[in-house]
Amino acid sequence: MRLGGTVAGDYANPAQWEELLDATRFWAVTAPFDCHTPKAEVDRYLEICRKRDVVIAEVGVWRNPFDPDPALAAENLAYAVGQLCLADEVGVPCCVNIVGTAGADGWDAADRSNFTPETYARILDSIRHILDAAAPKRAFYCIEPMPWMVPDGPEEYLRLLEDVDRPQFAAHMDFVNMINCPRRYLDAERFIDDCLRLLAPKIKSTHLKDIYLHPTRLTTLLEERAPGEGALDFVKVLRSLDKWLAKDAPVLLEHMQTAEEYRIAYDYVAQKAAEAGVDI
Image (cartoon, rainbow, N blue to C red; front, side, top):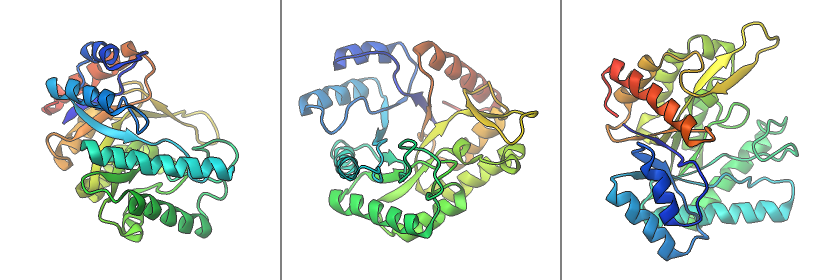
């Protein structure tokens, strides 16, 4: 697998980003540009990555197409189309977003409307619109699973893939986001293996992190953590990733804030990969 993450730190141009990249051991990264970045600048980022044999694993959208403000929702939908067009143009296979929420508590928030039949129909229409408007040939539009919105489990993801019914709609894997109840947490490694087994043929990019259930906090409190700071058995997790994913599949550490936090997480995963006999 190609272990990597988001290059942490402030940068204003490709040269500054290159310096930050050189301080990592990443083999895969998230795109440091978007559809508003000048083409010459995008080309320079691509050249930097090619020179270092670093894969750009994802072009992110991370905007809510169901924002309660109709004008902002339309802007976000157009941005998703633009990001998918960009991914297709530069050859990044995964353009990723979440499905969105009509709730007022944030772009990725839990809301009682998230699982209604009306919202599901709206999700299908939104994803199809993005794919049909961008008409990608190489890139795939993917949805990151979330604990409190569609898709919140591997079977639900399979249904979504089938219902959208577009060849350039594929899967993004974040198994920790789907560990959203004690049953899944307490048998996490089997659940993760099942997620990968069911979705592997469609997975274009994977996020890697840890999770911890507070054993004395009622009701259930599940907390995302950096690798090694939660309860997952990373030897088993990495063996599952190695078993089900392509050998050069990008696997991205996420949600660390600093280069040092990424370094610590990378060191831990690399140590567990060596124990597991998995190449990174």
